[in-house]
Image 1 (tube, rainbow over the protein chains, first blue to last red):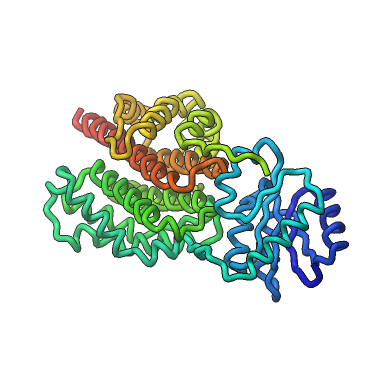
Image 2: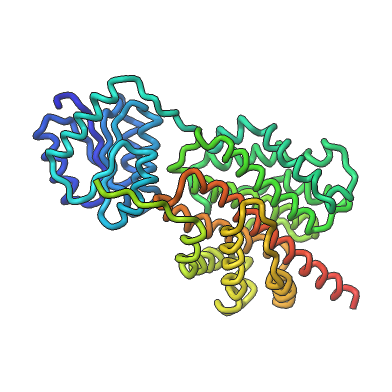
Length: 279
Length: 150
């Protein structure tokens, strides 16, 4: 296996070193990482792409082995991606994992079966990959901004309470392009819920406007509910493109940002002070 | 290769992880200075959550286009939070943290989930949580109006 570049990711130092020595003895060029963040850095900064990823599934800190799999696929769609996990967690997770990685190993693993699988997968991957290259939630929402607003408007138009307030379409939807832009920007920041929020003047203006237009607070919550449902509906309709390993982290950010915008809108609507919440 | 197991449902995971989800919600609440400025015991702070989560789990087990299961708990919660000194935006903050904690639980167990189903359940969770929030908000604002009129 001369010249094959392999990224090995495991937080267990003893296992990592043992595997590294065994793989190097078989001719692999091994780069080792002790956690997800270090692995992501290696993938991002590597001049020459990795041919193989061998990653533990569960590791302390942010992300897991599937996060690394996803990053590797973005970097090199033809890379062989292998995940290791301890039994019994492995058996319950295997179906979902196999939708993303090429193979799952149960620890402890023997070196020769590992080499055999890598060889077989490398031969298989020599043909052009047939997998879709996944897209981020941010990109999907950015590309489908108009469709999301249309989906939202259809929901609003079917709601008797909201339709009691007579508004033109542009008055009803005027706040949404800015809100979706804020959301996309937030999704593209590092995944840190505690530090990602910023004050949105758009949300603040929206609360004051809805008050003038005659909305009650329940109606504003109702519109926000419909927005979240529309966003998730758009993601569902693009499911084949969605990067599943990051999906639920992004879902958390979407819920957090939409409700954070709602918080600011209600603050403005009720005349509360504009303050920055701590978390 | 380990035999492949059937993926777990979102409802089952939330039912199984009910207490850890509440604990995580409380941890996040305790990081928001504005919320902890209203002094409440943990029991008073989290009292509405078991019923809210159970309503949600029940909704997830219904057919996909079922209507939100608005219980009296949401309305009672609005009145109670008003009496406890919350503002309207603080109700939304708590609801925001509820969604984040719930989705966080699913993220921790994403390996067990059915990839094709999870976003449909996410839609249901967002729909149910905000429907409950709307009901809470309506009774909260009504209590505010009543107090202003007295």
